[in-house]
Image (cartoon, rainbow, N blue to C red; front, top):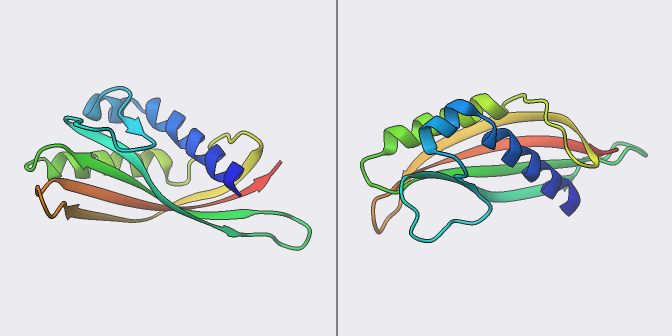
Length: 136
């Protein structure tokens, strides 16, 4: 299970790093596994993931619901966070990604949610996806 999660995460990282419109908006190298300290501007962080068995008979499979979170490091930039989220959805929804050691059966956008951090009011957009993978 964890190898499927890591393979999908790496493929997503590569796809977003290569997406020119997203890079223009947020800058290069702004997609992280963990939230960086004292980051300025827009950035994206891999969020929570829930993986489940998606096997059928003798065929093994993994279903993942996961999140990417777009953070805006200033309180007035909810619009830019929403724009970045839209670009991420466009880059990943129904994308055909190559995963190391796994085949991607499908990848679909599920939802997006704009919220504000309670203490500082910083906006974030949580984007949820569903993916199904099978080992090669």
